[in-house]
Length: 443
View 1 (tube, rainbow, N blue to C red):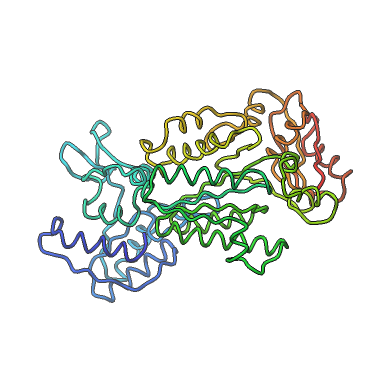
View 2: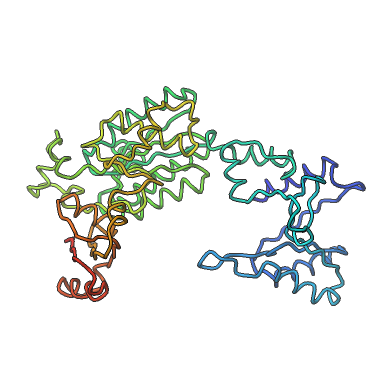
């Protein structure tokens, strides 16, 4: 919660008069957090003492942070214990803030360590609270002050009232633009008042990215600009639909981060139509020219990195446009960005059907299911565009190869070994005797 929102909440609590019989003075100290835990708590107590305070509330994990593994760096009560040990030197009384639980029988909060095990208590975790806020559910008054919840709901409205970005990626001619046109029409039908900004790859290069070439740096810059614009659209609670080729994972992740930082949702749709199918349906003859060496084209002479993390992967050669649109609508409804009553019923049905041509978040990947159903190990050495072991497995399966016992997928970068012979030998050494096969994908 940022400074302005936090201070608004404090002011609302003070103005309500519900918690203090004799009033309260709110003083704001312009001091940035250092996240130094116990030592920062001592520093804070010194500052409060110098401002004339007689008591200092020290919370659980005061000024705490996380380590690289995501765990608390300091102990929950380390700060309280350190400040307590020097309180006489500082001349301030410590008011420790412990974990509290709500007792509905008496409509009060009490320290958790003072409540008997057989007494009914109620609580809402931070994760549950965020989920309730995202869904627009009512927050009970016993959990938080209604005036505070009103402010938080204004700043972080339910997902259905926030902006989001649908980010298409895939080869030229894969069907991205066709699906996006159908999706634009469907979203407009569902909510005509919600404005949609389309960032088509060709149009962006004509205006926003005019002057950029097709080097790796320029391509990444182009996608970053699209991500920035999409972030500004969702910041104002609009819908952005980006339709670039976006061949590199790093640039796609940067675009995702820009949108997330702006408070919007991000749905990446990887249109996984094969290069052979793209070439077959190519009316401009670009693939023919690229294969003859006349031009440079992504998927032929320029690399395309398959997405490592994508919400939806759709093979447009097998999935009709209408179904593709409904898969996307279904995802948006399932995650809360569209109200379910506004999304067509067939959208949710299709999303749960788990067709082999569509992989989606929270639904088992066909390749992953194959791995789970059988025992043993298979070593997959992913090189070049197939940087993910799972993507390599998908690719090998698509070309008709099969393994007797694929279970665990190993990924080793090409840089791990000096040459192809070292790749195979080193890969087998890492996998052990139980490996069934080594798959080497050329760059």
